[in-house]
Length: 117
Figure (cartoon, rainbow, N blue to C red):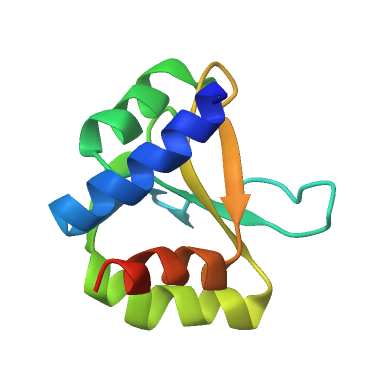
């Protein structure tokens, strides 16, 4: 399994157990980096606050952002439908010098949580 694959698996496991996901926000709003090769924008989320904080500390583009907790139920019921409507993807546990990783559709992410019920 690739490192990104391991981060994806950890996201699925940790977010379910912790009941929260973590986003990055600054004065302009939540982080939503540039458009990817497929034309879609991804909004990154992390399964632990320490994972998100590491990106803030290590990636220049995210310096000055704060880590914000979002309850999984709110995220699934309110955030993901909005992302789906806007054609946005969900980045999960991005890491590394450029904060990269898997980007999934909101429907793919929702399936993970439905499988846990």
